[in-house]
Length: 463
Image (cartoon, rainbow, N blue to C red; front, side, top):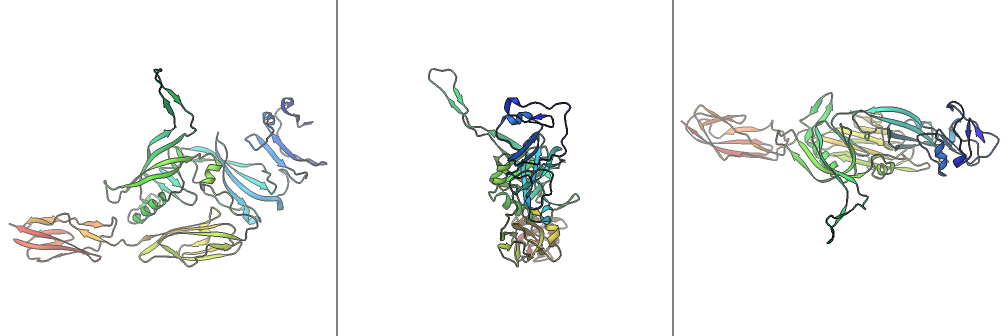
């Protein structure tokens, strides 16, 4: 059988296209019952008895002995889902997300891809309609270039952008081998039977909350860093990528090193990581909960509601929501805290801007069609001092000269604006904002008060 210049015979009897390279814009098959139709620009694919979608596939439709299938018909009730795939040029497709379709509203969705490598790497994205019988319709494709500054660490729900001093300073490629020496041989035998081949490395970067527009929130970064540490050490898989184009699927191993040697507000984090999967493998990405494959299941009566709240409470503690029902919740920060970040995810899609009121902190989802995840955190408005002390027990100062005390404050980042200073005898020495001035010879005591904590130091004034 010859069709559009191609011979549909099998194996070695396949013929190349006749004439110029024909373009295929549509196909119509009638007057018959068919199992499937597969069209490809590469005739060598027909050497294999198992046909599946590839780069050269033009159409792959399973008919199930019907003719109401193919690329040229209205989806209607036959459409089951929309898949979103992404691939780096030259790499396999990675399934990022699948949206189950039950009505026209489900076709509209937003997906934020935190897992694309940078360094001006070109990617191809594709939307693929999937029919209820499993048929993949033709890919709807577009190309995008990915570029960013610094490093990004992400999981399936949130991401952190480390802009300052970020670097993977060292990596090691691990491959297990056995070296066997023999009594009668000068050189050993090396056996490379293991398939293990993974990377371990060290990441470091300065962690300060970024507000956008080249602005950093130094004052309120304490709790942001604590939240970041807790997230890094929760044992869940992460995706780590750096601006030079490198990327790994990892788990953080060991401890988080918090170095403040340069400045108390310049927190330089470092940690070790272990590669656990292939970033270009759909199964590895899905099995490690990095991609949100399948937003909901047809016919499901209820969906799971997950609240990940840090220093925030909700007035709706429900863990399930009725399918197609509404969900309402009001978030409240703990005392001395203010809500600093809220993310609402429906089936892996970020819907925060359309359902969350930043003034009232009310969440209203009119129709819950997938599992719902709410992530919220609050920043402490003021961090109280829990300990105040001096590194010196006694200081000496001459009449008319001054000496400045530098109290040791805990915790790091605590508010020091309310420290009160007092001299037991101002006739001998005065103190203003920690600066002592000698007035006359003698001995007195200087005290500092803050948040119920007290520190004192003896002062000797000499001529």
